Image (cartoon, rainbow, N blue to C red; front, side, top):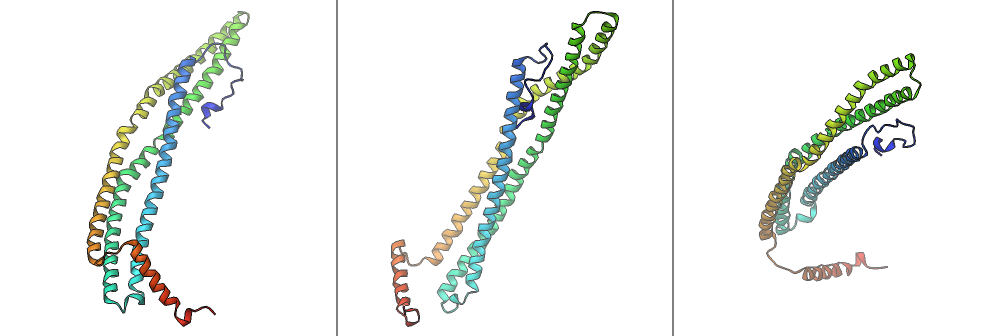
Amino acid sequence: MSFLSSRNPFKAGPKKQIVPKTVERDFEREYGKLQQLEDQTKKLQKDMKKSIEADLAMSKSAVKITSDLLGNPLCEPDPDFLAMVTALDTAMKRMDAFNQEKVNQIQKTVMDPLKRYSSVFPSLNMAVKRREQALQEYKRLQLKVEKHEEKERTGAVIAKLHQAREELRPIREDFEVKNRQLLDEMPKFYNSRIDFFKPSFQSLIRAQVVYYTEMSRVFGELAQQVDEVQLTDAERERENEAKLAELRALSIVADD
């Protein structure tokens, strides 16, 4: 929850309206948009990190599968099968290298800019906090002035009133500067998000296009090497079931 929404609305304050309600509504609306932007930026960072990690893990697993097959006695007696697995292993290693290039590109053009963008929010939140502190001090001193104004105008009261107004003046000016600056700069920061992120996600799309174009080319070449006999999925399933039936017929796997 924002500290702006944690203020006690029932706490006694000055009678004079410190900040017009329309200005306060504008301020809280603009800051609320930035809080939402901060949350979405963090979520995007987290999702991109998960995506990269999953991408790398899948690529490495594919390489490990083919490496394990090559070291498996399964391939030794069949030169054609060994050649097929070797071709697959080569293709997987090529795709792993392309994938690493893609990840490096995404890290530089998407993840790093996201990280730099997120680093701005703590300073922004601190500026809003300082504005809130200035506002509370402004209210405190305004209330002090009003209390002296309500008293009978004796010499002592007039002196205290003058002193309270002098204390109030720089505090009011400080708040007004902070308030004006934030009202001017928060919309500018929010509106800059598209110009900042658009190049990053254009680069992300290009990296994916390059990767999947390479994948299509590599696997097209692989298909020409290993898929000499074109079988449908149903035909392959029937062939596998027939081979499995032959294995089940062996005495060593027969039911007792």
